Image (cartoon, rainbow, N blue to C red; front, side, top):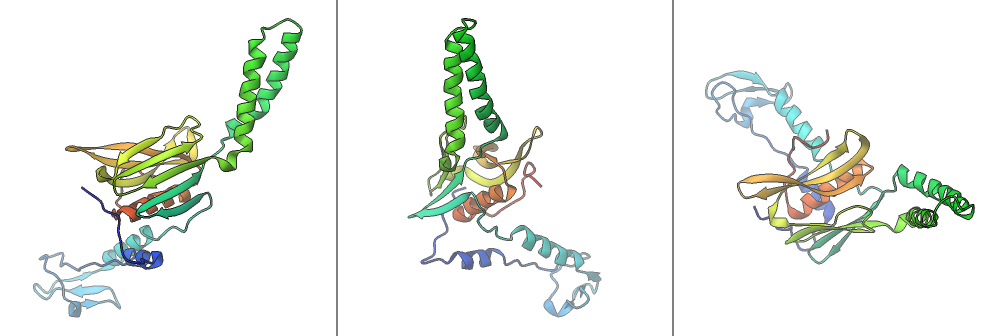
Amino acid sequence: MDHKPLHKLKLNLNEYLDEKQKHFEFVDCPSCGDHVNADGINLANLMAKCGKCSAIFTIDDIKAGLNEKAKDNQPIVRPEGVEKYYYGDELDLTVNQTNFVLEWIFSILAPIYGFGFFAGWVAGEIPLFLPIICAILALISIASVVTRKRQMSHIRVSDEIIDVVHRPKKFNKNVEFRTSDVEQVYVADMGKTTTGVYKVMLVLNDGDSQKHELLIKGLKSIRLAKYIEQEIENHLAIENQKVIEEVK
């Protein structure tokens, strides 16, 4: 299925979001399946009467369903840690990379071990390459922590491709997918051993089947992850649908 970016001359973002929040429902008789006209529905007591078979029934479940749809489709305001830009028809989301606790710990322990290995080398107890390696690792870890505000992941969405470029990569993989293959976007947990960290996944059409591919991971806020999902789906005019694997 090909998805084209939704265009409208001087489209106001709030106008588009307001349109996405409107929900409609028809009332069908549970007895005969016929559509119930408006004059057969009493919104005051949420009751309806079928004009064909005269069955009387409640429409509480329809109201609840509309409320649930409205809740699920409430737009997420841009959270801290992400910037949104447009370059012509392209959407660009720039996300701050996360420094995890282990990076902070390593930036402290690496210099300490480095001095220890250096002292051991001076005493002639260990070879020189150990303090050198430790010093290099210490410099890398400290630089990573100091420059954390300039470490970004760039998500680019065009009518042809979706790609993610990490600067620096920090053991992340730059990825690229064809927009025409994207069926759905969703948010999932990183895993049972990593709580409170999320990833954004793509459901891609692959011939007669579908596959799930990682778009970006290491997001320490579900609001941030959901915002990325929302903006990609809005830009590609993909209707949001529930996926079994997505976070509740």
